[in-house]
Each structure stands twice: as C-alpha cells, then as structure tokens.
Length: 347
Image (cartoon, rainbow, N blue to C red; front, top):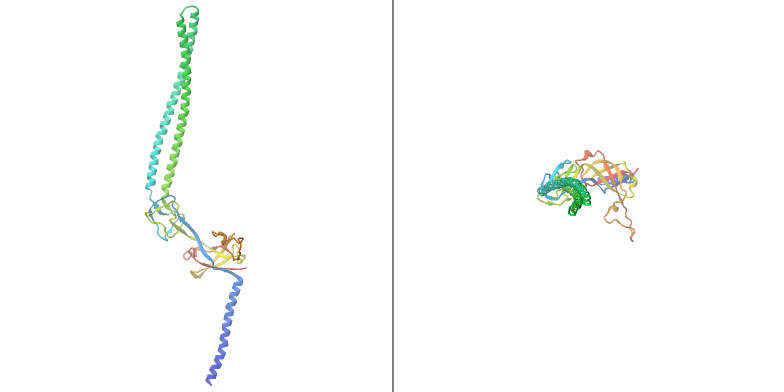
C-alpha cells in the first residue's frame, strides 16, 4: 500500500518539475530572443588611449634614466639625459672659429678704411697734378712766345714742352690710380660683406649646437604612466629611436568593431552599455562619438580586392569610437587594450 502511494507521488512530481523547467527555459529563451531583437552587441571591442613614444632628438650615449617602468610622470618632467660631452666640445670649437671670424672681419674693415684714406690721397694727387699741368702749360705757352721773339733757345722751349707733356702723363696716372683705388674699395667692401655673412653662418651654427645641447635632456611630452623601457644607461641611441612610451591615464575611449549589418542602430550621441571583461560586474555607460568612413579591412596592409577573381562575401566590420561617461570614475580600472563587450538598443 505504501509502495503504491510513493509511486503515485513520483508520477505527480515529474510533470511538475518538467513544467517548471519548461517555464524557466521558456522565460530565459524569451529574454534572449527579445534581447537579440532589440539590441546590437559585439565583443570585438577594446579600451583605447593615447600612447606617445619618447624619442631623443639627437644621438648619443644614455647618461641617466630617472624613471622606472610604470612610473607616473607629469608633462615636461625630466625622464632621461644623454651625455653631452661631445656636443659641448663641438660647441667650443665653433665658438673659437667664431672668434677667428671676428678677427677676420676686423681686418677686412681695417683694410677698407685704409683704402678709403688712400682714395682721399688719390683725389688730392689729382688736384696737385692738375695744378702742375696747368703751370707747365702756361710755361710752355710763354716760352713759345719768347722763342718766337728769339729771347730763349730752342732747348729751353723743348724743356718746357717736355715738362708740359710730363705733367699731362702724371695727371693721367693719378686718374688711373684713382680708378684702381675705387675698384679696390669695391673688392674690400665685398670682402667685408662676405666676412659678415660667414660670421652670421657661424653664429647660426652655434645657436643650432646650443639647441642640440638642450635636446640631451629628454622631457615627458605628456602626463601619464611610463610603459616598458627599451633602453638602459650607457646604451648608444640614434635620434628618433623610441626609448619608451607614455600611456595617457586620463583619457580613455572604446573602439568597437560592429558588423556592417549592425551600424544602422549606431548614431553619434547614442548611449551604449560597456562591460569590461576584467571587471564584469562594473557596468559603464558610453556614447557613440563617430563611425569610421571605411571598414577595418580598408586599413589592412593588403586590403582585399574582390574584383580579382573568386569572390567570397565576408561580413565587414566598421570601427566605432565610443566615449566613456564619467571616465575619471573608472581611471583605476581602465587599461588600454582591455577587452570590452558593447550593447546598444536598436531603436
């Protein structure tokens, strides 16, 4: 009798359990179906931030590194220093060369000044020679009259003529000397200008060398945290070689790659829900900032060319940039590269 009662109870419990399972399964199934019909989701997303490489602007040996891996730094903070002994020696050589150029330009100006004084002397010589020529002409004319009156001899007349012709030649020579002096002044003026230009070039090189010396001190281009260092003290680095990177820890956003048949639900300003895989219980709200004008495949090193023959249609993905609301609240948990799930309501 008891066995029959127990069998009867079992036969009643089984349908109840089955009904409960069907109800619960149907409820959760309905929720999943309803969610898929009203939401667009993707797990192809990650946290992004600005990562700036720290690059030396001159080559040299690393003298010191004043930061460690993952240290926090401020914008403009000294992070490393290169040995400047070689650049300093080159600067001293340039300064000595500049001093020599200063002496050269002083000599050129002195030569120009001497030539200017000589030019004044040449002008005086012309006036003197012209006076002598005029006197010789008057003597010659007077002697011609005296010779015609037979008051002097032929030799005296010839001497007067010779003195007159000599005075003319002397005047011509002083004019030639003046032309030579004027040409020499033009040459010396050009030499002074050339020396001044050379001096300006040397000064520009000195200024450039001083600028290079300032480049031996390397400062943080932005605030953030140091990434992994790629350099050690005593190592020789070329200009432009990345020493390490600085990760901006104040500005974060999410880049989600939605399928092309999902982007109709995405418009700038629309709210989305973000779930970071590292902190699944923390729900973060974001807003759509913008959609890329090209699919991710277009940015590949070798973009696909569907006109090349065999064609297989592949659903493309479009990068979507999402701003994080109240990003300062999540600074301690956000890390560039973390995986994120993104949910957005279709309508």
